[in-house]
Length: 199
Ligand code: IMP
Image 1 (cartoon, rainbow, N blue to C red):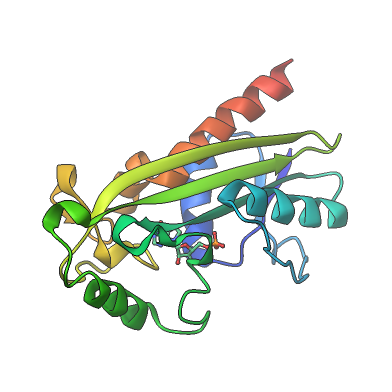
Image 2 (image 1 turned 90 degrees about the vertical axis):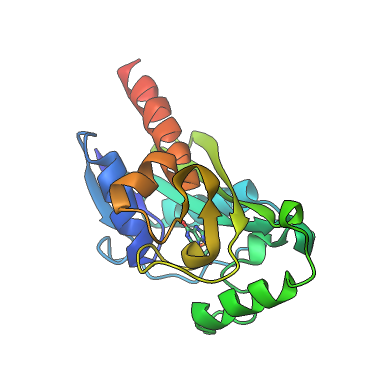
């Protein structure tokens, strides 16, 4: 089975390869599959965007299993921003040091109990026969007062998980995969794919 994962983000690709390692499949990024098309993520939910991406790539590679995720950070105090705009928040090319510092500043007036948020990941699969499968995973946390940690990517340095006493940037990749939104959504998708292909 050939799986193409629709992302250009090397950080995500690394997580995906670790989680899907036990599937009997060749796992390719879009670049490795030679696909380079612009995709307009104009859905209003993570799931809609994941399906849009997976269908666009499926049109270029109809014989492969195409997986796509859409994910992001919801901050309750900011009315669930940046949400589906997580990568575009303050501009796609703005460094995360700046985005993370801005979010911390915006929470300056928040009570501790108001600093809650979550990473959400929706995964969509389009199979060679056109079937669409979707899953979702969530990890709850709070926005840290200062960035911490060198691991992960994006908003990881400001996403503090109380049960680990650490931000997701301070976790090892294995620890993060075990609890992350994408880890949960991908493992759920792995089970669905196994069930689908066993039948
Ligand atoms: P996507 O690539 O369209 O799914 O956008 C995801 C964006 O959400 C990323 O560019 C990050 O800004 C943020 N994000 C999603 N997952 C994570 C994560 O695990 N850690 C940190 N930031 C994340």
